[in-house]
Length: 389
Image (cartoon, rainbow, N blue to C red; front, side, top):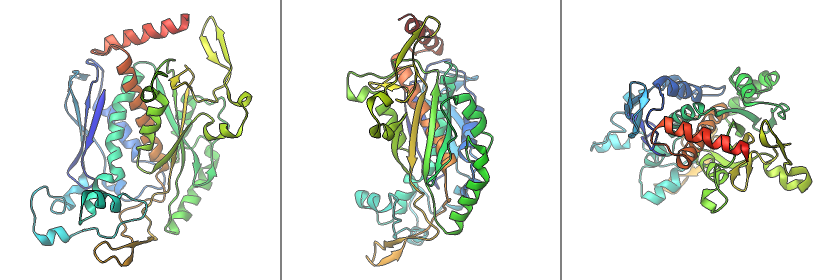
């Protein structure tokens, strides 16, 4: 299973093509639209979310509510394109049109300048349009398809914010299940499990916005009912935690990943970190704790996956930082596109769907998956074998 995305932030539409899905997977457009709506929510979002109301159009690979096994094509139209038809035209245009919304003052923290240097652009909008976080729309759309596959195999995921711009907001999580996280974090527009902190965090975000600044933070994704043995220790590029780490860091503005205790484990002794193994006739093997976040040796160990991603502050500031005009090389205040004080709740949705995509890819690679029925049978047979080991 693999996928490609295409499209620019202010272009006519965004597209994703997924190849390698099993035939016969039940799928509805509404499954995808639900995730797209989640991505557009969250406290602190700005004007673009009021313009766009993302809805998917499935143009291939699906018939009568089931996948065909052929490439699945997903399209999401940009409503804002009506204001950009000449500026983003694919054909030749007059020089006067080219000068409209031309970007020559790169924004610190963005891909603008380096992209222009790499591809020899005299208009950095060519970089901005594709490097925009708008691309995560299709990462979520692909993830929604992956989540549908996982759900039909009994695997579920959830996300929540654990740190808002330096403010720790995670409740005690030792006995918190994926189901409880979905219920609590889904009940508010901040993706908080500890809802008693909501008023405080909203006031904090409002204050950041008034100052023309932005904040980042840390989001956590958990996955439950993932069987042991996904991934492999035999080669570096087959380790599943490495694949997930790469996928998470590929999300716009994400700068780090940890599993379980993560970086904290570097401050502890081995006896405080390793998860002791136990066995019961009913459940088979399990761990007494989950400090390693469900991974051992690059493979899942049967415990819930616990993955945290670090998102830097959104680099576009309404109080712009200094930059350099690339036409004159003179210092200048950076250009300002739309910006939000924070996008952490939305980032959690993106990360959840990205993790789901990697898990679905791994499952489709490991098990026979020409048809979804075949995949289900192979998956259940494998789980039964593990229980008897």
